[in-house]
Length: 222
Image (tube, rainbow, N blue to C red):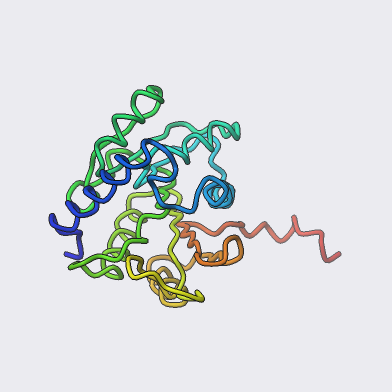
């Protein structure tokens, strides 16, 4: 199985523990480019599906910034569940947002079907280059698992291979290859590479975004 190993998980947790020691519970601890970039990401992601009345699963929720965005944008979701492997993040989130649910769960070892998500979000989850595990295999396995669990679909972002420099601690994905893989899971895929210069987002749907109307209802070509 293409899962994160226990050693890799420990390295990830140690990395975020160190960042929390340095920055506290601040966006700087996420190393996601700061609040302005998070706002751009979340604006795009929240608009891909109609989230009103939907159950949202946020994998790698961090300090619950996406939940804050949804709440402040007035998007009336049915429920929010955040998952992370960094316990201090979850403790912080639970105290701040008791109305939401925050769980420690390894998505490769524990299914998420019991959470009955309509839409699963995975943002900034696959940026770090793994020391032993294969980034591409892990990302594809996670995508397949979350898409199978989601009723409506999945939104996921990656750092793009179309960059003018590369940092050794990051992994850069080829958009064409990830699109090609996503198309093996569903024919209904969109790729967004127009919101920030060095990343892209894939949206996978179980059903087409637009339904074909009955012929008698089409008046645009009369």
